[in-house]
Image (cartoon, rainbow, N blue to C red):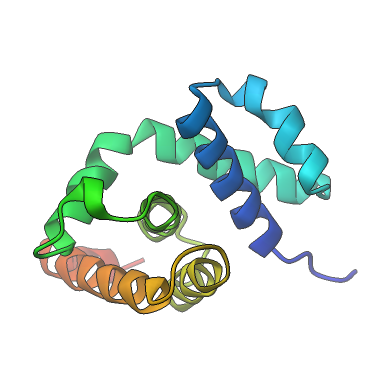
Length: 145
């Protein structure tokens, strides 16, 4: 059986979070419009919704991590898509251990490159590198399984 790509799930999660932030809609309200724009396999939809739920659940923690790793940038000055892409990558890195670190970071950089501003890919890469460096300092036992 062919393996299903999770990039569409990440893009779906980004679109859902963006729609919810812009319109103030709940996930259930935003879902039909986002699905109309990008049909997904059931596994992709399930994973995308997992990302949306995790980002919502850990929103304050994610915002603090983005602030802590974006020296000289106020959270409000960071492009909305970049903040959302960073949040998705950070929940994958922190809460979904089966996703390799390199995959989560590469996917975030490539999605930012496609959907956000010029230079967003480098910005997202730098923030995530700092995030991982700070995580490894604060959670050294995480290397044990």
